[in-house]
Length: 303
Image (tube, rainbow, N blue to C red; front, side, top):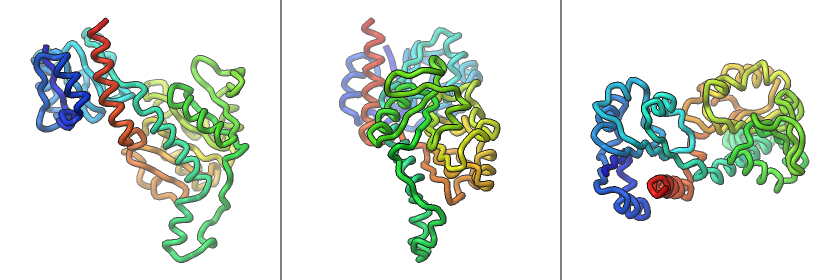
């Protein structure tokens, strides 16, 4: 059985390499990560491929491939970089690493919450401009006894809730499976009430047809003017122009996003903090991602 690996650096991961060598008869690490134009050839003449979130597999790519693998392993939690519907139509199994970056992304959310609540961007700029406290136009606030609303209580959202409790925060959430009630630690509320009651909101949903442009002016109109909104999901989940206008109008207080695709004018706003889609790329999470994927592939073959 043959596997093509799109990320050559994985060859340096001893755990990954040893397991791959045990599972497969032939392991090919390509020299350069394949572009979208090169993907049809990359997918051809192999039983398994291993890709990262940078590699895009669309319907067109699948149609252009001379042959298709039986398995696509992706070094990611999300699957929005591949056309999962078209892939599954062709009987291809997709394997990912859904828990590898939970801890690192949840920590990033709390980091964003602290940075926004303590006005760190404004404070840093005030020091650079030699303005002292006068350069910080609003007072910081504590997380203790504030309410954090978590939209999407999956693995990452649940870990955010756990961390938030450590800061003495009140946690409310809404999920597709449970919209009202309580489990003793988290109160479940309707989405509009979550936006009405929260001081901080963390968006932790996958990107799909239902969540695209999900966070927009219509929903944010229910928010408090002191709301700090945090998005570690995909950029397309929110409407950047709406958020920028609400910030300009002082309808919300701050915004943070972990994405490569933040609207430039939004990123430049003094109450906005961004990171370039690296919340899940700590040293530890990267190792877990590699190892969890190859473990999951091995488990699949050992069924």
